[in-house]
Image 1 (cartoon, rainbow, N blue to C red):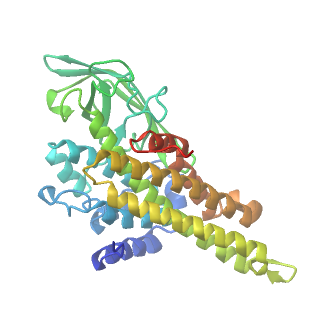
Image 2: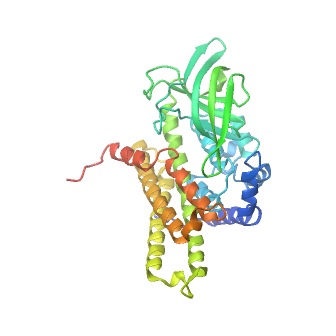
Image 3: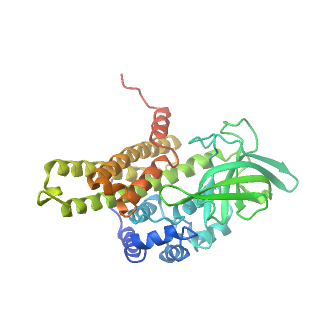
Length: 379
């Protein structure tokens, strides 16, 4: 199988990289982080102008029908630039709408950069089990009434619309009985508590207090949201793996540059063989992660759900292991400076750490991989 990127994919990646290098430098990013909003309207408009917001949207809704491989090259570049805009949250939300069908007008707005989305799936007791849903959706003559609290919703306070999971039937940890709803962020009874995460991005806790939504807010069929959650989350994991590869490329490059310039005993410390071995090991970890991230991007659209789950979980586990190793080694090789906010490497390591725990950490995905049919325990 040929894993070479097409000319169009290379050109798109180069366009995003040029934008990052010119208009989203580390100093520019610091100003955005320190701003009251924590994100940049100008940066979002630039992403829309580049076509990044339209890339994963179907052509019928004004997009480019980009594949997971197309998205992989974009996420790698955004990872390399440590971009903190709500791009991942929005395209993940769009994937939910694509898989369910309907809500075409919202997808058109996403393609044009007019609407930002966020997915409110987790609760304080659920950890990585997105089927553990205590929030309720009660049907009435006007649609549904939602009650409950969703936690750590990535860019939940920056979103214009939220995709919320709520239980319309069944027990709290049943996969059956979960419904999905598309809710305007300013709907009465919905409140958001915004906070900054360790990687300088934002998350929010969403409280739903007798939130009345029309029947048209339902995404897919009532009580049948789990299959959408499972498949769309795997798509999100694939994007995170690609972003992590871009981050590892950047942090490895920054570390190599530091070893070439930092001197000890009158010579660059990169001359010391033991540090050269460390860099070689970081490179190997990064390349293994790249291979698994690419495989996940190829298989995430598979019609075989078991194959998709198996491949995506294997990729997330391997990328998580590599991200931890590469990040920790980069900090060690930078010395005490490796954990200071003045260096991009520190921010890259923090983002890698957050990716590792988003949509399931390494342990969660190892367990999921083992649970798939066909896995054989070694004797």
